[in-house]
Length: 299
Image (cartoon, rainbow, N blue to C red; front, side, top):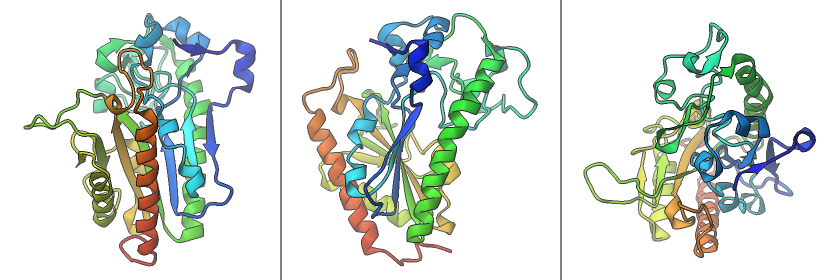
């Protein structure tokens, strides 16, 4: 099923939410930019896809898997809008001119690899290369989505990161995603349970990435780093280890907790969520033990 809202409901619809702790006690910010599952009716009308097909790009229930962040003392920012509608894990204007009626602004990035692959700021496809739109989209529609959804989402994320940095002297952003169950590591038959991305060591300290890997492995999961997912725009844009701002992307294998055919939660959902809660708790404890370490709180 696709959850849509009528026009009256859209006026009060929260495009994203922040699950805040009573008091932020750990230097972490969690974000889930792709878990939104409320589909605007005008978008559904524009699409050639229906039902589950249009939902193939969602990071299904990732906001729920990481929802304990607030009880541990960290804010969780999560999208309610779907990734197929607008992808905030892209540059603001990665746009494919072939998709739109009207001229794009001169500053649009029309030549990125993500645009070429159909996965720009306004995606052309969902997973499995299924075309979203039945016809071209008015360029004004695309620019409105960027102004009213993309920019406010990032303004909120920047505020949460800045607040954390000021309060603790450093901060760790964890950008939360899911990946298809059929992902395999090149050159092997290994199916990872988690993939951590740190942009090949440029968005977070090596020590922090190693700690995250070790915690996941101690919890009994197969974890790999950077392959095939090294992190998207959010990880790259906000990770500044030299300034004490670290960004990690974490991908959870969907087959651990959801039936990828029906998109229903598996019986193991609560168990996986509990393991992720333990991962977040141990990460916070690890970082607390390194408070003042120049590798984390760099100037």
